[in-house]
Amino acid sequence: MLAFVSDIHSNLEAFLAVLSAIEEAGTEEIVCLGDVVGYGPNPKECIDLAVKRCKLSIMGNHDQATLFATETEGFNLRARRAIIWTRAVLEDPLERRSNDVRWEYLGNLPHRVEDDALLFVHGSARRPVKEYVFPEDVHNKEKMQEIFAEIEKVAFQGHTHLPGVFTESGKFLPPAAVDNTYEIGDEKLMINVGAVGQPRDGDPQASFATFDGKRVEFRRVAYDIEKTVEKIFAIRELDNYLGDRLRLGR
Image (cartoon, rainbow, N blue to C red):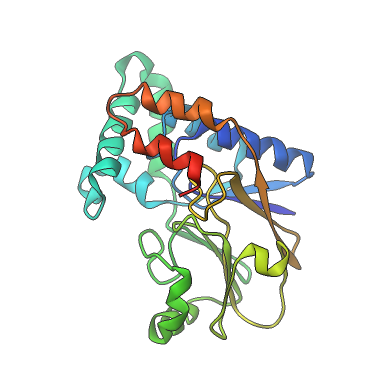
């Protein structure tokens, strides 16, 4: 069984809670679908955990922006400031050896990985790092057709922080609509696993998913949000809004 995590965003408390839940579920392998860093207060610790615990990790847009300063185009001011701060943390000369390992991890992240009929990306099959696929995009038939043309069977992705299933027939099914479990059939699918570190679907609990080859199960786990919020508030370069939104799941 596979576990999928995405959009950890330097939220150590959320990541630890999810890793504990994955271990309790007896899941064998973890795939990270990108954005280990960005927004949150613990980039070093989250990278270290991803290196240790994830069998495979994919490049996210915040990971890429941390590597290359020019890749912050399109980021809002809060996101850019968080990336600049993250880069400074990872350039600390007092942790040069550890940070060299962290930079190597970020630098080696692939944009997409195919495993038999499964595709792993951060954004979309068409533009793996940066393209958003939102629930309302089911009404954009041309966009969805072009993306599904790049998918053999099932694509697992993140980026929007909104969990759910996109069907090739033009539906978006949030976890609540399928009782948190979706059986894989003959139809092509895109499955967004949601966000570990910054959910945006109104539920502040960390989101992840498991896959046993036949069905996807969407899971949520509570974590110490206030501890993460306090850390964000204590770092001048991180906007307080980045903490406030965690309480709301927005």
